[in-house]
Image (cartoon, rainbow, N blue to C red; front, side, top):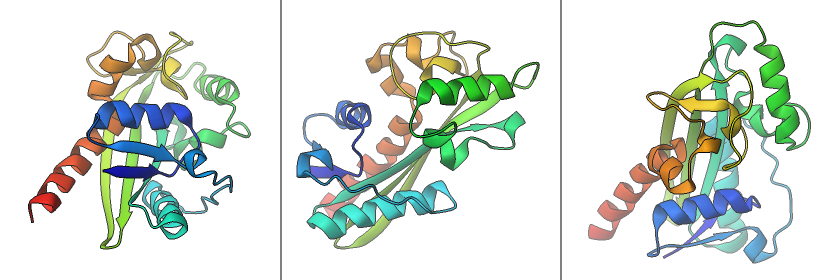
Length: 193
C-alpha cells in the first residue's frame, strides 16, 4: 500500500518507512514534485496534521498522512509546541535547540514530552492518532543521530538522548512509533471489514 506523507523532510519519511516496514511504500511531497509550502495555520497539532493530510489527498488522490510533531516543555508553558520547527527562525534546529536551552538556563524543571499527531485522509474521511513520549531536557546536546530536538531530549527510563540512540532503538519507543502503531491497528481493522 502506498502512503503519501505530507513532508519534504527526508528524515521523517525514512523514519516512518522504517517503522511501517516493507508492506507500505512511503512517499513524500518531493516524490510527487510538489514543492508548495503547506501553510500550517492551525492552533493545535491536530489542526495542522489535518491541514497537511487534506492538502496531499486533494492534490494527488492518494491516501495521505499528515504528521504534526513537536516538543512540549513544561517550564516553558508548552513551548515550543506547534512552533517547534520554527521556534528560533526557519527550520534551523541548532538555533531552536540553543533557544530552548537558553530559556531553561537555571531552570530545575526539565520535564518535557514529544508529541506526534497523525491524520490519515482517504476517500472515507479523516482519522487521528496520537503518540507521546515523556522525558527530560538535557543541559547541553548529546549525540549525532536523529534530527530536530533529539540531542537534548532523554526519554523516561533511558540514559541516552534520542540523538545518542541508533535509529532502530529510537524507532521502538518514539512518539511517532506510538502514533503509527495506532494507525497500523486501524488499517488492519479496516482491511478486515
